Length: 54
Image (tube, rainbow, N blue to C red; front, side, top):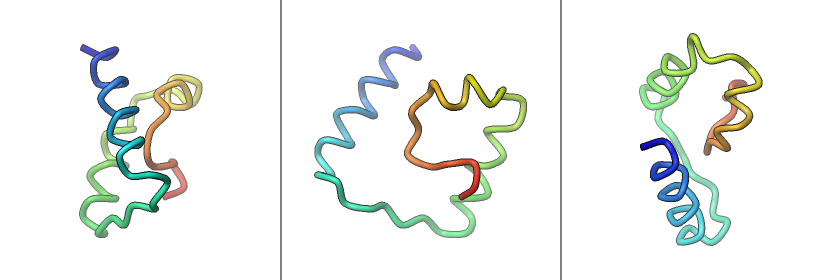
């Protein structure tokens, strides 16, 4: 499941062509909440579209 999601993210990023994504405050809060409980090293390995600083 995780490998599928990683590949899906790669495909979607390729379709964006380097364009920057804009998130609403609500979206940023939801994404930040999902990072709770994930160690910093694991978070970096996920290669996400956002950073913890976001």
